[in-house]
Image 1 (cartoon, rainbow, N blue to C red):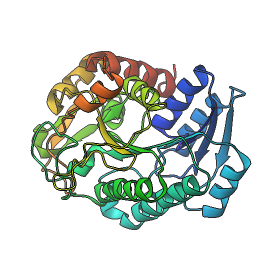
Image 2: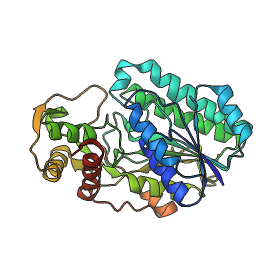
Image 3: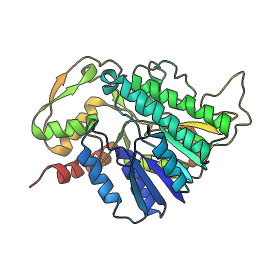
Length: 336
């Protein structure tokens, strides 16, 4: 089976590709290797994946429709996992055009290629950020997500709407996954757990927003990958009980489904920092700041539907996952 992983040089795409290769899938990796964060780190991930002969890498930008169509024409692709996107909530306040370009136009091109070269399943990355102004905790896929508070969130909400349109029009089975604060080795340097670790090691001050009064549903990368693997051969079917007068936002009369994928266990940010300090063996210098525009106070995933449908069960305690990350960080960044 040929599986296309877009964003293969990214954090989640790298780990997913590595797991797929270990399970003997043929993996076609695609990435534009943009410089939103360290390109060298992305190339190092690809270098590791290319050690497996079942992995083929293509440097293609999703906005290049012709190159994407040619890739589908040259390969018999069975499943698409679209993880490529312009990431980052705060960056979207500075560079909103980048998000529409990559996340909206790029995703449209993925949908169009899946239309012309039908696939068994399109799985794509949405985000917990779509919950925006919603304060009904835990976040459920049955809740409204009509009030995003960042352009990043708005583009991810747009992806869900676009996917439904193509599921309806062209019968493409689409599954959207709302990721909740993914962390782990080979992670993204722009994420707080990574930058906090770097700054604590270097004796620099870390910036803690909303004066530390925040919670995040930290989810270890191995648990995320396990959920993705479980969904591969579980494309959504028509929901025969879907009611147009009382519509379930997470399913449809079309082959369309939305899931939360998180740890279902939010952790206070200050407790998170204390765990990092204990693992690193060094106290953090902290600067407390007000809430940033576009940010939210708490994320908390209701994962009952994913548990029910594919027996998803995140099993990595935060301290265990952070220990693996800190050990990797020391090995990768701190040279003896």
